[in-house]
Length: 410
Image 1: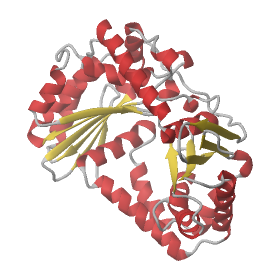
Image 2 (image 1 turned 180 degrees about the horizontal axis):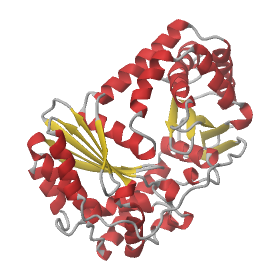
Image 3 (image 1 turned 180 degrees about the vertical axis):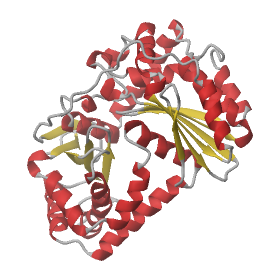
Protein backbone atom coordinates (compact mmCIF):
# COMPACT_ATOMS: atom_id res chain seq x y z
CA UNK A 1 0.00 0.00 0.00
CA UNK A 2 2.67 2.49 -1.04
CA UNK A 3 1.60 6.11 -1.32
CA UNK A 4 3.08 9.61 -1.18
CA UNK A 5 1.67 12.40 0.97
CA UNK A 6 2.50 16.09 0.72
CA UNK A 7 1.25 19.17 2.50
CA UNK A 8 0.91 22.09 0.11
CA UNK A 9 1.96 25.65 1.11
CA UNK A 10 -1.74 26.40 1.67
CA UNK A 11 -1.94 23.61 4.27
CA UNK A 12 -3.99 21.27 2.10
CA UNK A 13 -3.03 17.61 2.40
CA UNK A 14 -2.58 15.69 -0.87
CA UNK A 15 -2.06 11.93 -1.22
CA UNK A 16 -1.12 9.97 -4.31
CA UNK A 17 -0.96 6.24 -4.93
CA UNK A 18 0.48 4.86 -8.16
CA UNK A 19 -1.66 2.02 -9.47
CA UNK A 20 -1.80 0.21 -12.81
CA UNK A 21 -5.34 0.85 -14.02
CA UNK A 22 -7.07 2.46 -17.01
CA UNK A 23 -9.12 4.46 -14.48
CA UNK A 24 -8.14 7.26 -12.13
CA UNK A 25 -10.02 7.87 -8.87
CA UNK A 26 -10.03 11.37 -7.38
CA UNK A 27 -11.41 11.89 -3.91
CA UNK A 28 -11.80 15.20 -2.07
CA UNK A 29 -12.39 14.93 1.68
CA UNK A 30 -13.52 17.71 4.01
CA UNK A 31 -13.23 17.34 7.77
CA UNK A 32 -16.82 18.27 8.46
CA UNK A 33 -19.86 16.17 9.24
CA UNK A 34 -22.79 15.89 11.58
CA UNK A 35 -20.61 16.26 14.68
CA UNK A 36 -19.70 19.81 13.63
CA UNK A 37 -23.28 21.02 13.28
CA UNK A 38 -25.28 23.15 15.69
CA UNK A 39 -28.50 21.33 16.69
CA UNK A 40 -30.66 23.98 15.02
CA UNK A 41 -28.73 23.42 11.76
CA UNK A 42 -28.61 19.63 11.93
CA UNK A 43 -28.28 18.20 8.40
CA UNK A 44 -26.52 21.18 6.83
CA UNK A 45 -23.42 19.13 5.91
CA UNK A 46 -25.53 16.65 3.97
CA UNK A 47 -27.59 19.44 2.40
CA UNK A 48 -24.40 21.23 1.33
CA UNK A 49 -23.25 18.02 -0.35
CA UNK A 50 -26.50 17.92 -2.31
CA UNK A 51 -26.50 21.58 -3.27
CA UNK A 52 -23.04 21.84 -4.83
CA UNK A 53 -24.23 19.53 -7.61
CA UNK A 54 -27.03 21.96 -8.51
CA UNK A 55 -24.70 24.33 -10.27
CA UNK A 56 -21.38 26.15 -10.07
CA UNK A 57 -20.03 29.23 -11.81
CA UNK A 58 -18.42 27.18 -14.59
CA UNK A 59 -21.11 24.49 -14.69
CA UNK A 60 -24.57 25.99 -14.06
CA UNK A 61 -27.61 23.77 -13.53
CA UNK A 62 -27.04 20.23 -14.87
CA UNK A 63 -24.06 20.92 -17.10
CA UNK A 64 -21.57 19.49 -14.56
CA UNK A 65 -23.14 16.03 -14.71
CA UNK A 66 -23.15 16.16 -18.50
CA UNK A 67 -19.49 17.23 -18.54
CA UNK A 68 -18.48 14.30 -16.31
CA UNK A 69 -20.40 11.85 -18.48
CA UNK A 70 -18.85 13.30 -21.63
CA UNK A 71 -15.45 12.48 -20.14
CA UNK A 72 -16.58 8.91 -19.50
CA UNK A 73 -16.65 9.40 -15.73
CA UNK A 74 -18.98 9.12 -12.77
CA UNK A 75 -19.23 11.46 -9.81
CA UNK A 76 -20.87 11.21 -6.41
CA UNK A 77 -20.55 12.27 -2.79
CA UNK A 78 -21.24 11.15 0.76
CA UNK A 79 -21.70 12.63 4.24
CA UNK A 80 -20.93 10.96 7.57
CA UNK A 81 -20.74 11.93 11.22
CA UNK A 82 -17.13 13.12 10.72
CA UNK A 83 -16.62 13.87 7.04
CA UNK A 84 -17.99 14.93 3.68
CA UNK A 85 -16.36 13.59 0.53
CA UNK A 86 -16.73 14.07 -3.22
CA UNK A 87 -15.35 11.41 -5.56
CA UNK A 88 -14.84 11.09 -9.28
CA UNK A 89 -13.76 8.08 -11.34
CA UNK A 90 -12.82 8.63 -14.98
CA UNK A 91 -10.50 7.38 -17.74
CA UNK A 92 -6.83 7.96 -16.99
CA UNK A 93 -6.28 10.45 -19.80
CA UNK A 94 -8.92 12.81 -18.35
CA UNK A 95 -7.52 13.10 -14.81
CA UNK A 96 -6.50 16.77 -15.06
CA UNK A 97 -10.03 17.79 -16.01
CA UNK A 98 -11.29 15.75 -13.07
CA UNK A 99 -9.18 17.72 -10.59
CA UNK A 100 -10.52 20.99 -11.94
CA UNK A 101 -14.10 19.71 -11.68
CA UNK A 102 -13.78 18.73 -8.02
CA UNK A 103 -12.11 22.04 -7.18
CA UNK A 104 -14.89 23.93 -8.95
CA UNK A 105 -17.54 21.87 -7.15
CA UNK A 106 -16.64 23.02 -3.63
CA UNK A 107 -15.13 26.44 -4.28
CA UNK A 108 -17.67 28.02 -6.66
CA UNK A 109 -21.19 26.64 -5.98
CA UNK A 110 -24.05 28.96 -6.93
CA UNK A 111 -26.66 28.03 -4.29
CA UNK A 112 -29.58 29.46 -6.25
CA UNK A 113 -32.65 30.15 -4.07
CA UNK A 114 -34.99 28.17 -6.33
CA UNK A 115 -32.69 25.14 -6.26
CA UNK A 116 -32.46 25.29 -2.46
CA UNK A 117 -36.23 25.06 -2.07
CA UNK A 118 -36.48 22.19 -4.56
CA UNK A 119 -33.68 20.25 -2.86
CA UNK A 120 -35.33 20.61 0.54
CA UNK A 121 -38.19 18.48 -0.80
CA UNK A 122 -35.71 15.84 -2.01
CA UNK A 123 -34.00 15.61 1.39
CA UNK A 124 -37.31 15.56 3.28
CA UNK A 125 -38.32 12.63 1.10
CA UNK A 126 -35.08 10.86 2.00
CA UNK A 127 -35.85 11.37 5.69
CA UNK A 128 -39.36 9.94 5.28
CA UNK A 129 -38.08 6.91 3.37
CA UNK A 130 -35.55 6.15 6.11
CA UNK A 131 -38.21 6.47 8.81
CA UNK A 132 -40.44 4.00 6.94
CA UNK A 133 -37.63 1.44 6.59
CA UNK A 134 -37.46 -0.62 9.81
CA UNK A 135 -33.76 -1.43 9.42
CA UNK A 136 -32.85 2.23 8.87
CA UNK A 137 -35.14 3.25 11.72
CA UNK A 138 -33.39 0.72 13.97
CA UNK A 139 -29.95 2.19 13.19
CA UNK A 140 -31.24 5.73 13.70
CA UNK A 141 -32.67 4.84 17.12
CA UNK A 142 -29.50 3.05 18.15
CA UNK A 143 -27.27 6.03 17.38
CA UNK A 144 -29.77 8.40 18.97
CA UNK A 145 -29.74 6.45 22.24
CA UNK A 146 -26.08 5.32 22.42
CA UNK A 147 -24.79 8.80 21.58
CA UNK A 148 -27.52 10.74 23.37
CA UNK A 149 -26.57 14.37 24.09
CA UNK A 150 -23.46 14.17 21.87
CA UNK A 151 -23.23 15.36 18.25
CA UNK A 152 -23.01 11.73 17.06
CA UNK A 153 -26.58 11.23 18.20
CA UNK A 154 -27.96 13.61 15.57
CA UNK A 155 -29.17 12.19 12.22
CA UNK A 156 -26.92 12.75 9.21
CA UNK A 157 -29.87 13.75 7.01
CA UNK A 158 -31.10 16.23 9.61
CA UNK A 159 -34.66 16.63 10.81
CA UNK A 160 -37.72 17.98 9.04
CA UNK A 161 -37.81 21.06 11.25
CA UNK A 162 -34.13 21.89 10.64
CA UNK A 163 -33.97 21.18 6.90
CA UNK A 164 -36.92 23.49 6.25
CA UNK A 165 -34.98 26.43 7.72
CA UNK A 166 -31.82 26.19 5.57
CA UNK A 167 -30.94 29.34 3.61
CA UNK A 168 -28.32 30.41 1.10
CA UNK A 169 -26.54 32.26 3.91
CA UNK A 170 -26.33 28.99 5.90
CA UNK A 171 -24.66 27.26 2.97
CA UNK A 172 -22.21 30.09 2.36
CA UNK A 173 -21.26 30.15 6.05
CA UNK A 174 -20.75 26.38 5.97
CA UNK A 175 -18.46 26.76 2.96
CA UNK A 176 -16.39 29.54 4.57
CA UNK A 177 -16.11 27.66 7.82
CA UNK A 178 -15.04 24.27 6.53
CA UNK A 179 -14.10 24.30 2.83
CA UNK A 180 -10.63 25.79 2.98
CA UNK A 181 -7.20 24.16 2.47
CA UNK A 182 -6.43 23.43 6.12
CA UNK A 183 -9.57 21.33 6.37
CA UNK A 184 -9.23 19.35 3.11
CA UNK A 185 -7.48 16.20 1.93
CA UNK A 186 -7.26 15.38 -1.78
CA UNK A 187 -6.45 11.82 -2.91
CA UNK A 188 -5.57 10.55 -6.37
CA UNK A 189 -5.04 6.92 -7.35
CA UNK A 190 -4.09 5.74 -10.83
CA UNK A 191 -1.42 5.28 -13.46
CA UNK A 192 -0.38 8.93 -13.79
CA UNK A 193 2.80 10.90 -13.14
CA UNK A 194 3.17 11.72 -9.44
CA UNK A 195 4.82 15.16 -9.57
CA UNK A 196 2.41 16.36 -12.22
CA UNK A 197 -0.52 15.23 -10.06
CA UNK A 198 0.68 17.28 -7.08
CA UNK A 199 1.28 20.29 -9.34
CA UNK A 200 -2.21 20.15 -10.87
CA UNK A 201 -3.93 19.83 -7.48
CA UNK A 202 -2.03 22.83 -6.11
CA UNK A 203 -2.86 24.81 -9.23
CA UNK A 204 -6.57 23.98 -9.14
CA UNK A 205 -6.96 24.95 -5.48
CA UNK A 206 -4.58 27.92 -5.52
CA UNK A 207 -7.42 30.43 -5.29
CA UNK A 208 -9.34 28.63 -2.55
CA UNK A 209 -9.98 31.19 0.25
CA UNK A 210 -9.01 30.51 3.84
CA UNK A 211 -11.70 30.32 6.46
CA UNK A 212 -13.10 33.57 7.74
CA UNK A 213 -14.77 31.82 10.67
CA UNK A 214 -12.90 29.43 13.00
CA UNK A 215 -14.60 26.04 13.08
CA UNK A 216 -15.96 24.66 16.32
CA UNK A 217 -13.62 22.47 18.35
CA UNK A 218 -15.47 19.75 20.23
CA UNK A 219 -14.77 19.20 23.94
CA UNK A 220 -11.94 16.80 24.76
CA UNK A 221 -14.14 14.28 26.54
CA UNK A 222 -17.66 13.04 25.92
CA UNK A 223 -19.75 11.46 28.66
CA UNK A 224 -21.97 8.56 27.60
CA UNK A 225 -25.10 7.78 29.52
CA UNK A 226 -25.85 4.27 30.85
CA UNK A 227 -27.51 1.90 28.42
CA UNK A 228 -31.26 1.50 28.19
CA UNK A 229 -34.05 -0.64 26.74
CA UNK A 230 -36.19 0.91 24.01
CA UNK A 231 -39.07 -0.74 22.18
CA UNK A 232 -41.14 0.69 19.35
CA UNK A 233 -44.21 -0.79 17.69
CA UNK A 234 -44.42 -0.32 13.95
CA UNK A 235 -46.45 -1.53 10.99
CA UNK A 236 -44.07 -4.40 10.21
CA UNK A 237 -44.35 -8.19 10.04
CA UNK A 238 -41.01 -9.04 11.65
CA UNK A 239 -39.04 -8.21 14.79
CA UNK A 240 -35.91 -6.08 14.32
CA UNK A 241 -33.48 -5.76 17.19
CA UNK A 242 -30.09 -4.34 18.07
CA UNK A 243 -27.68 -4.16 20.99
CA UNK A 244 -25.23 -1.27 20.90
CA UNK A 245 -22.16 -0.35 22.92
CA UNK A 246 -20.22 2.95 22.90
CA UNK A 247 -16.57 2.05 22.36
CA UNK A 248 -13.18 3.13 21.04
CA UNK A 249 -12.63 5.60 18.24
CA UNK A 250 -10.51 5.10 15.14
CA UNK A 251 -7.58 6.72 16.94
CA UNK A 252 -7.49 4.18 19.78
CA UNK A 253 -5.29 1.10 19.73
CA UNK A 254 -8.39 -0.82 20.82
CA UNK A 255 -9.70 -0.18 17.29
CA UNK A 256 -7.82 -3.18 15.88
CA UNK A 257 -9.02 -5.66 18.52
CA UNK A 258 -12.61 -4.45 18.10
CA UNK A 259 -12.42 -5.20 14.39
CA UNK A 260 -11.40 -8.76 15.29
CA UNK A 261 -14.24 -9.00 17.82
CA UNK A 262 -16.76 -8.00 15.16
CA UNK A 263 -15.58 -10.70 12.76
CA UNK A 264 -15.47 -13.36 15.47
CA UNK A 265 -18.95 -12.61 16.79
CA UNK A 266 -21.03 -11.77 13.77
CA UNK A 267 -19.41 -11.32 10.38
CA UNK A 268 -20.10 -14.21 8.03
CA UNK A 269 -21.83 -17.56 8.35
CA UNK A 270 -18.89 -18.97 10.30
CA UNK A 271 -19.18 -16.42 13.10
CA UNK A 272 -20.26 -17.41 16.59
CA UNK A 273 -23.61 -15.66 16.62
CA UNK A 274 -24.59 -17.06 13.22
CA UNK A 275 -23.67 -20.62 14.16
CA UNK A 276 -25.30 -20.49 17.60
CA UNK A 277 -28.40 -18.32 17.22
CA UNK A 278 -29.25 -18.85 13.54
CA UNK A 279 -28.09 -22.39 12.73
CA UNK A 280 -28.24 -24.28 16.03
CA UNK A 281 -30.91 -22.56 18.16
CA UNK A 282 -32.83 -21.05 15.20
CA UNK A 283 -33.77 -18.02 17.28
CA UNK A 284 -33.17 -15.56 14.43
CA UNK A 285 -33.39 -15.49 10.65
CA UNK A 286 -30.48 -13.09 10.33
CA UNK A 287 -27.82 -11.71 12.67
CA UNK A 288 -24.65 -9.68 12.16
CA UNK A 289 -22.29 -7.31 13.91
CA UNK A 290 -20.93 -3.93 12.89
CA UNK A 291 -18.13 -1.87 14.43
CA UNK A 292 -18.51 1.71 13.21
CA UNK A 293 -15.50 3.83 14.10
CA UNK A 294 -15.27 7.61 14.07
CA UNK A 295 -12.92 10.35 15.21
CA UNK A 296 -14.43 10.85 18.66
CA UNK A 297 -15.92 7.45 19.48
CA UNK A 298 -17.09 4.14 18.07
CA UNK A 299 -20.28 2.11 18.14
CA UNK A 300 -20.32 -1.69 18.24
CA UNK A 301 -23.70 -2.99 17.12
CA UNK A 302 -25.27 -6.45 17.06
CA UNK A 303 -28.28 -6.56 14.72
CA UNK A 304 -30.84 -9.36 14.36
CA UNK A 305 -34.28 -10.06 12.92
CA UNK A 306 -36.84 -12.86 13.15
CA UNK A 307 -40.46 -13.55 12.26
CA UNK A 308 -41.70 -15.19 15.46
CA UNK A 309 -40.10 -15.44 18.86
CA UNK A 310 -39.08 -13.55 21.98
CA UNK A 311 -36.58 -10.65 21.83
CA UNK A 312 -35.53 -11.29 25.44
CA UNK A 313 -34.59 -14.87 24.58
CA UNK A 314 -32.49 -13.63 21.66
CA UNK A 315 -30.79 -11.03 23.84
CA UNK A 316 -29.98 -13.62 26.52
CA UNK A 317 -28.44 -15.92 23.91
CA UNK A 318 -26.30 -13.06 22.55
CA UNK A 319 -24.99 -12.25 26.03
CA UNK A 320 -24.15 -15.90 26.53
CA UNK A 321 -22.01 -15.92 23.38
CA UNK A 322 -20.23 -12.74 24.45
CA UNK A 323 -19.43 -14.35 27.80
CA UNK A 324 -18.16 -17.53 26.12
CA UNK A 325 -15.87 -15.51 23.85
CA UNK A 326 -14.26 -13.76 26.82
CA UNK A 327 -13.40 -17.18 28.30
CA UNK A 328 -12.44 -19.19 25.24
CA UNK A 329 -10.98 -18.23 21.86
CA UNK A 330 -9.24 -20.82 19.70
CA UNK A 331 -6.29 -20.16 17.43
CA UNK A 332 -8.37 -21.48 14.54
CA UNK A 333 -11.04 -18.83 15.12
CA UNK A 334 -8.41 -16.14 15.44
CA UNK A 335 -6.81 -17.18 12.16
CA UNK A 336 -10.21 -17.14 10.43
CA UNK A 337 -10.77 -13.57 11.60
CA UNK A 338 -7.26 -12.53 10.58
CA UNK A 339 -7.70 -13.94 7.07
CA UNK A 340 -11.11 -12.32 6.60
CA UNK A 341 -9.81 -8.93 7.69
CA UNK A 342 -6.83 -9.25 5.35
CA UNK A 343 -9.10 -10.24 2.48
CA UNK A 344 -11.46 -7.31 3.01
CA UNK A 345 -8.53 -4.89 3.17
CA UNK A 346 -7.01 -6.31 -0.03
CA UNK A 347 -10.36 -6.04 -1.82
CA UNK A 348 -10.54 -2.34 -0.98
CA UNK A 349 -6.90 -1.68 -1.87
CA UNK A 350 -7.03 -3.37 -5.29
CA UNK A 351 -9.32 -0.74 -6.83
CA UNK A 352 -8.59 2.91 -7.51
CA UNK A 353 -11.79 4.14 -5.85
CA UNK A 354 -11.41 1.82 -2.85
CA UNK A 355 -7.83 2.98 -2.28
CA UNK A 356 -8.74 6.65 -2.54
CA UNK A 357 -11.63 6.26 -0.09
CA UNK A 358 -9.55 4.33 2.44
CA UNK A 359 -6.60 6.73 2.37
CA UNK A 360 -8.78 9.84 2.31
CA UNK A 361 -11.09 8.96 5.18
CA UNK A 362 -8.24 7.88 7.43
CA UNK A 363 -6.20 10.96 6.62
CA UNK A 364 -8.91 13.53 7.17
CA UNK A 365 -9.87 12.28 10.65
CA UNK A 366 -6.57 10.72 11.74
CA UNK A 367 -3.65 9.81 9.44
CA UNK A 368 -3.27 7.74 6.30
CA UNK A 369 -0.48 5.85 8.07
CA UNK A 370 -3.22 4.02 9.95
CA UNK A 371 -3.34 1.71 6.89
CA UNK A 372 0.26 0.62 7.50
CA UNK A 373 -0.46 0.09 11.21
CA UNK A 374 -3.46 -2.02 10.26
CA UNK A 375 -1.26 -4.63 8.59
CA UNK A 376 1.07 -4.72 11.60
CA UNK A 377 -1.75 -5.21 14.11
CA UNK A 378 -3.44 -7.83 11.92
CA UNK A 379 -0.36 -10.01 12.07
CA UNK A 380 0.38 -9.44 15.75
CA UNK A 381 -3.12 -9.64 17.26
CA UNK A 382 -3.39 -12.06 20.21
CA UNK A 383 -6.38 -13.74 21.85
CA UNK A 384 -5.79 -11.93 25.15
CA UNK A 385 -6.10 -8.46 23.60
CA UNK A 386 -9.43 -9.31 21.93
CA UNK A 387 -10.85 -10.71 25.16
CA UNK A 388 -9.58 -7.65 27.02
CA UNK A 389 -11.51 -5.17 24.83
CA UNK A 390 -14.66 -7.32 24.92
CA UNK A 391 -14.56 -7.26 28.71
CA UNK A 392 -13.79 -3.53 28.66
CA UNK A 393 -16.63 -2.38 26.38
CA UNK A 394 -19.32 -5.08 26.33
CA UNK A 395 -20.84 -4.47 29.75
CA UNK A 396 -24.58 -4.86 30.50
CA UNK A 397 -24.76 -1.42 32.10
CA UNK A 398 -23.32 0.14 28.93
CA UNK A 399 -25.56 -1.73 26.50
CA UNK A 400 -28.49 -0.13 24.69
CA UNK A 401 -31.19 -2.57 23.55
CA UNK A 402 -33.52 -1.50 20.73
CA UNK A 403 -36.46 -3.59 19.46
CA UNK A 404 -38.88 -2.69 16.66
CA UNK A 405 -41.83 -5.05 16.90
CA UNK A 406 -45.06 -5.63 14.95
CA UNK A 407 -48.04 -3.70 16.26
CA UNK A 408 -49.92 -5.78 18.83
CA UNK A 409 -46.98 -8.09 19.56
CA UNK A 410 -46.42 -8.90 23.22
